[in-house]
Image (cartoon, rainbow, N blue to C red; front, side, top):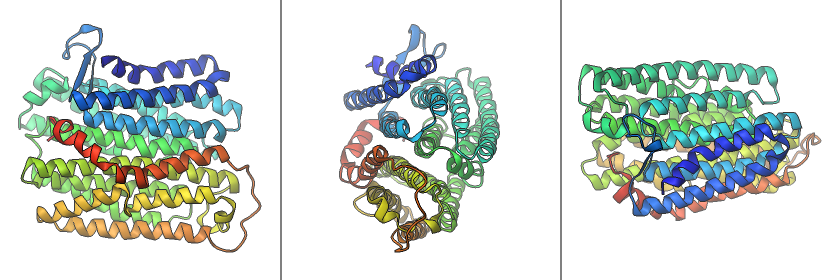
Length: 485
């Protein structure tokens, strides 16, 4: 099974090199690589069902000296999310970029980004996580520059890069402090050693601050709306669906696997409060946005806030079974948001290329011109709102129930307000699209080949995750929680 870990971590890097050396073959090579990665991730999920943790030391070196790859149910599920979204976005990107030179620059960076995501999810020590975070940030910022509005794209990419470097510096400082205190950076070893102390608290604050910047939690979100809204549609899809999600994955590892002795109810409440603010403020800004992509970007700020609402609830739940249920809901919400938001950005990319803009008040008549695309928008939006039978509905129901069980009823109010605001901005878009007036003459060709990936992702979030949520809980509850809770 260790061969699967190696393939998932290295295959995108080989694909990046191949696309760089033979750019004319990139359009053929990329879908094949994406399909292979989906197959590897599904095989890994099957292996994790039998073996809770798979660990491989590269070169035979021990975990404290060499590079180790590690997978459990949580990382395997996020790898499956990443490979599925990557496959859909890859198929979409083949037709999205009409300029050959832009497409030739896109593919090597695209596979570098995906290689960084996979390696991050499989890394088993804090320093290699830093390396993958740097590769992730650099490749993502470079991809943002490929947007059509070059001045805006460059400004957004530079802001993303600068704040990402600040986050990386904070994270690296925390890593150095952990090594000075405990003499190792291997996650399995640190999980047994970290104790409550001033040094551990300082390291936790540094590590968390750096990752919260990369996770775009309010008020550290200022780079996200511009970067996600100015990037090309397939890049926006992966940035919103995966890049911020894997950073949150690292925070989960830190808070509930390494620094459990340091996390206090006050710290968890602070994180939950920041998440609650993000839910309401991000939803309001999405409702007020005049552009579809900006609306989707602010929606990401809001949806990420829900994930942080689970932190104080997980800490307050009284027994393992209830924590396992809440943790499963958290993972389900993350998967739902990743798939639905990728579908939404791909569908918006089709509308933008068809009309030449993404202004909300000028998309009247799109329902008649692009019915399949608008159906994908409606399905993805329903999943983001949390309408049944989507995965978000089950996750929010569990969140609300757990908030009442732990006597933290204020998180229920946040979830209800955020859901109503999300429904409002979805209805606003659909209402504008169904308006009877004719839209302006189309300025771009219809991306028929792009409609299917967006529609399938939207259907997966709305129906697949909701109706198929039981296997996710089954995978996480007995095995995947492991050291997390």
